Length: 446
Image (cartoon, rainbow, N blue to C red):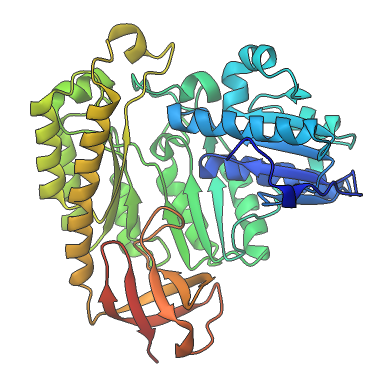
C-alpha cells in the first residue's frame, strides 16, 4: 500500500464512531479480526473491513509479522494510515496483531503517531479503548468477512514446534487447544449463519488436544464435526508432518463431508536442510507419508509449502528439492524464500550466506516447475464432471472451486455467466472444457 493518499479518499466521515478494521496476513488473523468486529457490532459502532476508502473515525490494523515481506506490508500499511491521520482523514490509529506483539517497543519509538499498539491477545483492551464494553457472553461469535458460505475455524493457538526459521512461537506462544465443546459451539454458530464449508486452521492442526487431553484429538474432533451433519465440506489446513495421526485418513475415507484435501507443509526434502530446519522428520518419512496418503485415497488433493534458501541449502540440496517436487507432483504447492528472523535458532546458529537474488532465482524455478505440474494435472481433468462450489463472480465469469481447492490460495473453476444464473454458496456439477496452468473452465451440467 502506497504511503500517499489518493485525492479521491480525502473525504473525512461525518460518523466518527465508524471503525475500519484492516486484516493483513493469514486466515488466522482474519478470524481474530472477525471476533473484534463482533464486539464492535455489539457496541453499536459502525464498522467496515478492508475497505478501499477511508471513512472512519478509528482505523485498526491487524498486522502480520511472520516473514520479511509480510512485515514490510504491515509497516507500509501503518505508514499509509499515519499519513491519513496527519491529513485529518481519520481521528485515531490502533495497531494490533503479530507485528505489534513482536516489535511493540520499536514501533512505539519509530512510529509514535500511532495512538496505541496492542498484542495478539489484547482483544479486550482494544475493545475498551474504543469506548465500548467488552462482552464475554459473545465468546465464539464473529462477524464473517469471508463469503457467507465458508468460514475459518481456529481450533488452537500458538505452537510447540521448534522450527529453526519460525518466529511464531515467540509471537503466539505455546500451543493452547480450544476445548472440543467450545469448538462445536462455534461451529454450530457458523452453521446457523449459513456456512457450508468449514476450514479448520491452527499453527499446527495435528498437535490439537495434546495439552488438554494428553493425546492427539484431531480425529475425534473431525468425527464430532462430521456428526453435526451441518457442513457439506470440512477442510483441514496446516497439518504438521512429524507425528501425523494416520487415523485422519481413515476418517477421510469414511466421511463424505471431510474433504479429500490435506495442507501439509513439508518445507524441504534434503535431510541436511530438514535437520537445520529442526523439522523432526526425514526424507524417507516424507516419502512414506505421501505414498500412504495416495495409496489410501487415490485422487487426494495434497497441498504443500516449500522454503527455499534456508541455511544449508546449497545447489545440490536445491536440485534435490526440485527433483522431489517433480516426482511428487503435488496438486497444489506454495513457496517462500528464507528470511532471517531475529532471535530464531537459525538466525543465531547459521549465517544467511545466499543472496536475495539467488533465493529469488530458486523461488522462480520452483514455481515454474509447479506451473508445469499443475497444467499437467489440470489437462487430465478435461471432460470430467466435478462438484464445484460457487464463491462469487468476476467479470464475465462465475468463480468456483473443487474439493481440491481452498479459497484464496488454490485453483479456481471459471464458468461463463452466459451459461445461466448461479448462486454463490451453492454446489453444481461442472463439466471441464478447458484449462490453464492453474485454473479450469467449465459449464454446468444437469
